[in-house]
Structures are given as structure tokens and as C-alpha cells.
Figure (cartoon, rainbow, N blue to C red):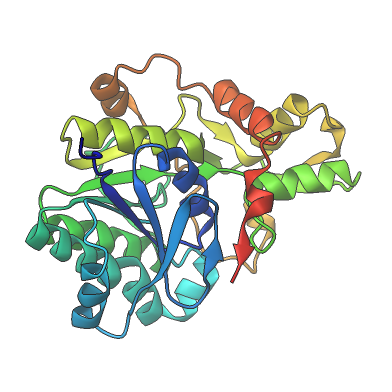
Amino acid sequence: MHEVRKPKLLIVGGSSLLALNLAPQFITDFEVYLGSHLMKVSLQGADTVTLNFDDSSKFWSSLDSIKPDLIVNCIGLTSVELCESNPSLAFFCNAEVACWQAEYARRTGAAFVHISTDHLFDGKQRYYSEDSVKNPQNQYAISKSQGEDRVLEAYAASLVLRTNFFAWGTTYRESFSDLIIRSLREQTPIKLFNDVHFTPVNAVSIAEYIMGLTAIGKRGVYNASSLKRISKYEFGRALAQRFGLNVDLVIPDKIQNREDLVNRPLDMSLDNQKLSLALGLTKCTLAKEMDRLFYDERSAWFREVKVK
């Protein structure tokens, strides 16, 4: 009897925080490859491969060594300030490399998932849908918007997920939720904006959305978010409550007090109705997403990630 071959999943940007949260969810059903360039990591159950980003042909050749059935693009230059000061680098990381992957997927027939952002709008309304008109306010948002456009132009069958996630970080990369939890456990007050709103989701849920949507052949843009629009300050308080930490250490602040920051949208909340209908979801609540974070700390997989 021949052993059934597992499909191959390549996560590009394999050392990123999102990639390392996605990978463990796929290991049972896929051969998982973490593709990176400068930083190489070791994660049990996944293989690490070096990708060449010198140009598109060299990049495609490095992918040919794997021949993935599914590619998930987690590469992104996410520092808004760095993108603003270096727009060409932002374009390369957030648009050009994404397009290379879409073109490769179209040529080989692989499924392709591109991770986008909730940062694409002017922030003057609530609950942006997939059909809302994009109006990027900074170079980060412009480059991510270009990434979406170039991906879908290169390969119409691509799946684009707009999201804003929280997750457990690693020894070398702290997440937003890590920062809050660490500060509160150290009894250190933390200021969070009460005038910036979003609809965050646990990275583990994103893995489930990818599996669900690709299994039924969905394409185009989907919002991957929780149901509740919440401020960064409210998020911090909710996280403190879930982890049994001192809520009073979460201090309200306003983004207008931070003159050092590049202009950002004040409201990035997403409407996830399209996703919910496609997958039959009924409870994408923030409380559920935080429960996952709470219980996943026991597995402590993120402490096992090693830099090679």
C-alpha cells in the first residue's frame, strides 16, 4: 500500500510572528516549509528553507526546489515609520515579492494566500467591508494596497486576507499582546490609545480561515476579523481581565499625543460577514479569541522556536 503524500505548504516570511503561529496548525495535514532569507528558525515538525530574493527568477528557482501545493505569504514590512522613510523598501517587501509569489502560483497551479492588512482606509467610518474604497494614509498602507492589487492582477485565483492579529511571540519578536501581558505581569503601567479602533483576531483563527477557504476554493478579498470593534485601550483592559491581571495599570492615551508617529487611520475595524457566511461561522467573538490565547500559553510552543 502506497503512503498518501501530504500536500506541501510553503510559508514565505517563515521567521515572522504570524508564520510561526500558523505553521503548527498545518503540520498534521501538510508538509510545512518555513521559507526565509536572512533569519532562519527551527520549529519542530516544519522544515526551514532558504529563499533567494535577489530577483524574481532566482526566487522562483528556490520555490521549484519545494514545489509547494499551497503558498501563504507572510512577508511584510510592518513598521509604519520605516515604510514612510523608505517607500521603495516598503514596495519591494509588501508588493513586489507578493506579486512574484502570485505569478509563481498561477504558473504552477498552486493555491496562493496573501496576508494583507486593515490599514488600507482613511479611518472615517466603522466596519469596512471588502468592497469599501481603499484610501491609504501612509506609505505602509500604500504599499500593502499595491500588494493586494498586484497579487490579484497576477493571479485572479489568489485569496487575500485582510486582518489585524494578536498572538504569542517568540524570544526574538514580541507581539502587541505580549507587550501588554508582560508589562502588566511586571506591574508596569502601559498607555494604550482609546481613540484608535480595530477588530483583532487570534492568529490561530487565521490558520483555520485559510484552511477553510482554500478547501472550498474561495478567491478574492476576505476580511479576517473578530466581531467587536474595540479600541486599543479596551483591548488591553480585556486582555488584563482574561489573564487575571491588574486592569488599572492600563492607562488611556490618545494617538494625537504622539507627534513622533506617522499619520494613521483612527478606525480600522473590519466587517467579517463575508467570511462568516462562507465558513458558517457564528461566534467570532473577541472573548473567544482571547480564550485561545490564554489556553495556548500552556502549550508554550513559541518558547521552542530557535534561531539557526
